[in-house]
Length: 606
Ligand SMILES: Nc1ncnc2c1ncn2[C@@H]1O[C@H](COP(=O)(O)OP(=O)(O)OP(=O)(O)O)[C@@H](O)[C@H]1O
Image (cartoon, rainbow, N blue to C red; front, top):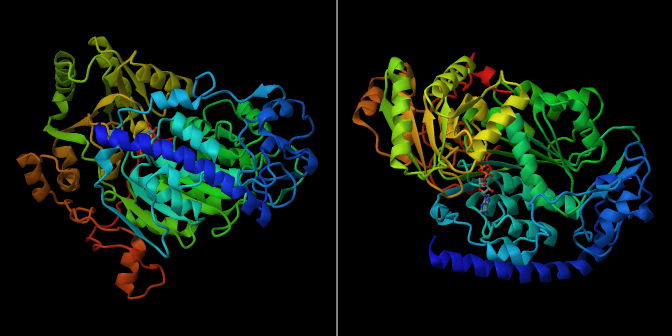
């Protein structure tokens, strides 16, 4: 990491502390004067207004003795308009304490004693090289797009959240965060497309947590026994990803008084129900389990102010769309324009964008990097390997990796295969040949899946064989090598798979085994590799030329805002969708979205 960058971020971090401090002080009068409503944490919402906390220091302790019905009685939802709650006069409602009730104290997700700022300052140099993202092309479209920021100090996220950002050792926002946070804080809906590993989770979590802390809007929750009324809903396609987002959200929300709960299938529902009953501001969920909770009338969405779909293109493709439509359009969730909706992914096929527009109101489209592209931090290699030679070829790769020691002892290798059976068979074969491997796929129990992931992350089993269930979102440090033992049918799946390495400014290696069975992917693969400045083997280019299905849907490698509204308006000569914006280059020609998940592939998912 260049010294100049490290110095500058350190300076920014210290400037952030002083600026944020003064910004908050400055807010006191303003917010008090404007009568900004106050946030009441979930476990206190049934208490009479006068008993809501006003002093964060004793917050957790006082909660434990609060008692009372936590669900049925009238309560003030987050940001609830009205006069109750503490924090009189503060833009942040004096919320810096943790939540707690019934003697429970908020666990420290950072694992440090007290998370002191001093300790974090010592660890500011994280080794993450975000300089790698400095020159990344960014485009926005939509009406009156709020300008980006360069530092966290420029955004008034609230001191408690700022402190957690420092604890996470985030000294500087990534490009997607620089753009999305001001857009979201301005209350705008958003469709954001940014490369894998570029910090999208924080990009949607920060504005949600900050917004709940501010408590700008809201209404009284109805009297419904044992029903949870979250203020924010974050949906993701897999159980593991939901757990990961929940872990992140808990860190970001530590001692803000904002409580995140996770609900996902395959795990006992009773524990999740108990968690919900303790109160929830942010519900992170997989769609199937959420539908179950809604049908049991244990969750109501009527107070939802923020809806975030992570891996939004996957959530809206034919695998999940019916469930998502049910959750978002057929239950009690406020409509677009009333709630704020944020869609994030590294890939956003045009047809899916068109579907997604139903969920959004006057939204900003943001693309960071080439839409659906891989980062050039990932070295991509494609090797021609016959089906029958794949195992011995993989063995050669693994041996070479061990012999070279390029990635050190802890290097982790993630091997993607197409089917669950194939995953079981390859895991078995690797183990019997002396390679410590485990596997994850949709037919394993949740316990087995979690155990496999733990064992892989810890380095105890440094080879993980996986179906597409592990393709998206998982942020596993030290994955040095992704092997596409079986290539996927769709280039976007390839982008997500290889994105398990080369994350957060680090470099990674991705090797794909290609043969005639993958001919239909050749053209898109060549385009993608060329966009990412990768060396394309001559034989692969020949495949691309020959391939009958070789039409690229990537726009011929031109970088351009891929906001489908722009194309629609250009085609129809109307401007009903597209509201202007900072779109500087043309939309490249592209093929139709073919549907990424054919039969047999969907089964790999939750
Ligand atoms: N501002 C930041 N400074 C340093 N590290 C960061 C910052 N923002 C995020 N990170 C780290 O970068 C890594 C990748 O972030 P994240 O998992 O949110 O990526 P993503 O864009 O959602 O990826 P994917 O498309 O694969 O889901 C995480 O380990 C996260 O902690």
